[in-house]
Amino acid sequence: MNRRLPCFLALSLAALLPPATFASPQAERTMDLPAPGGGHQRVLYLAPAQPKASIVMLPGGAGDVGIRRDGDLRHDDNFVVRTRALWAARGYAVVIPDALDGDNLRGMRSSPAYPALVGALVQFAQQQSPGPVFLLGTSQGSIAAMNGAAHLAPATLAGVVLTESVSVLGGSHETVFMADPGKVRVPALVVANHDDQCKVAPPANAARIAAAMTASPAVNVIYVSGGEQRSANTCGSLTPHGYYGIENKVVDAIASWMDAQLAR
Image (tube, rainbow, N blue to C red; front, side, top):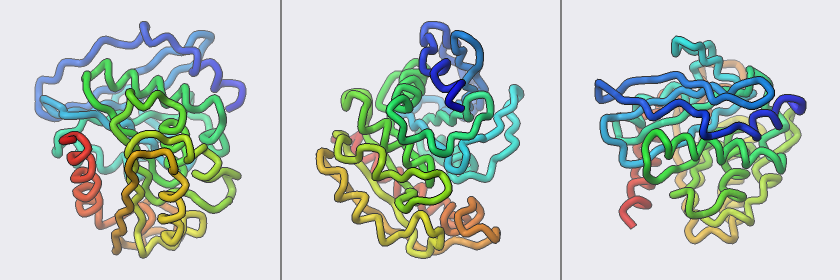
């Protein structure tokens, strides 16, 4: 991964595909963002007919969604992936990135180089649908969202949403606290599930995560509860950690917060 990441960070946004034209209220497009020197960043883009804003969704785990050129997904159970149609139904365009050439993102999301990757995705979102852009990360992806929000110009973001954030050191050797939370200067929302049993994302740390964003103009914390345990891995997607079974409730809560930011 260390060998490939700089190639993506140097990508030329001028080479991105032109904005897509959608014939239906919801249509998915798969696009490759070329990187000079080889490699590519593949993204899945979904939008309603007239998006009110865009969300760059940052998946958890290794970040490898497995987006095929035809739009099929090898790993589609992550919360931000499997709920993409719910966000579009609420008026939001969604950008879901795959890991660069399928590499493992664990341990990379808090790095000083990573915000440029997030920034490129934000610019891509604005190119497809000019307007406000939110960052939303889940689990390990919250580290990426925090890092992006901490280092991108505040004018480029409408806010950042951190869900079931990794706040205790585990196998990835990084947490949201290592991603410069004190430099976040946009509105922030922290979402935590009381029933999350993932050891590296304890719901009790939600208030601590919020308190760490000292430069944010406004930080809110939302607690939810419930969810089904369909995986032996308590940090897996099909568990309360991944909001399995309570997707609509969680999406409604987050969308309401985002709607409020747009109304300001």
